[in-house]
Amino acid sequence: MELIFEIRDAEEGGFYARSLGHGIFTEADTWDELRANLLEAVSLHFEDSTTRPRLLQMHYVKDELVPLEAA
Image 1 (cartoon, one colour):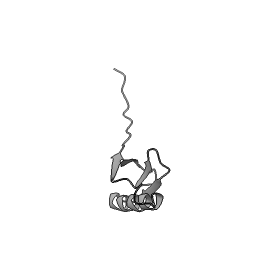
Image 2 (cartoon, one colour):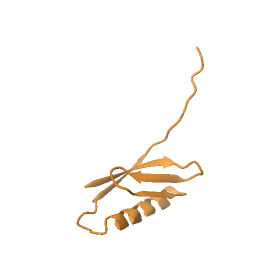
Image 3 (tube, helix red, strand yellow):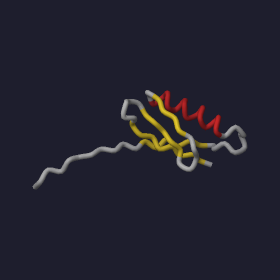
Image 4 (tube, one colour):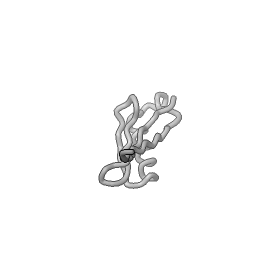
């Protein structure tokens, strides 16, 4: 089983992540800290090791608004 996290930039800096299909959410100032927080959050959410996912996908989404000038 694979658990997918959508990761976005936090407005105040750093990142926030939420799982798709599960109620897991965490945030961090750096990418490495976020990875560690995700591993801890998943471990706590899936206390039973038989139901814990085997893979964690960190899907980074970056929104950017680009103004289009009138032609």
